[in-house]
Image 1 (cartoon, rainbow, N blue to C red):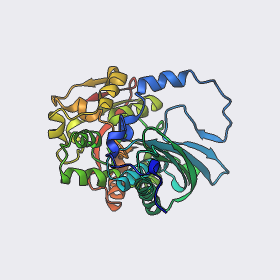
Image 2 (cartoon, rainbow, N blue to C red):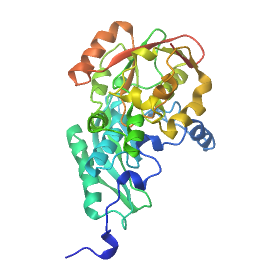
Image 3 (cartoon, one colour):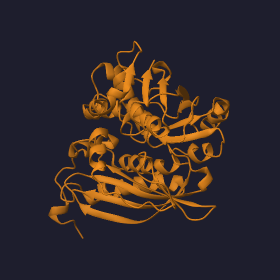
Length: 354
């Protein structure tokens, strides 16, 4: 049976042309999100809720018993790339990352699907879902259902459930004075996406973009087994500075970050110098720039450290003595770029970039 006319567009548009923003660059600006959340009604928090909304952590955690906790999260966004399979893989990898960032193991997912049915053919929509299933299969996650709507812009993501031992859940608020900060993936995904939208990203850059955003943050549960690892989060739409600030605020500490120690994806510095930046980078700085002091001589530091990451790397707060083991775990899981980038110390929450 042939497709009905309303489901068979004459030409298939670029996925990124259908969205006003892509990947985690779609996130509501940090300052606006805080204003919105402040308006929510207060609720009674039962003792089983180990992690809620207090410090903008990566997932909710509900204790089932003394040995096991349920970790729940959801994440979805509009296309960051045009290839539908790649988009599905990136969105699913990004959603699963929040469970890894709590030190837990993902087990189950529900798909969240919003598609312009009259604009995209069923084959393209199916390819997006297939890409998501491929990422889930690599993570050992079963996609057990979901929900779909006819949407003006294409949207895809997952609600993900994971399991972890309550004593090994790693929050973003438990960093300690003297801890080192270790970043698991290089920055630059937002800059790559801005270049892609303007046809300024070459084939090598695209391969690097997809490789980074589809690399599962599998070190998370392994890092949580290390006693010297005190806090975990992942770097996504608010940029490195935004998510590091969440650690600082939650833990009541200040941070110093070395700009020259932060790993970058190939060619990102040159693209940033050419002005290929996202609007989300500017919104990020406007939201939290007052809490950051730039002392380094790098003119691009602000743009690079506020760049919104889609499916970004883990940010680890660990005792200096645990650093060799932390880097060993990252290397064994295929994260050769993982590097110490700064440290935490006593002081009012905020960041100095050296």
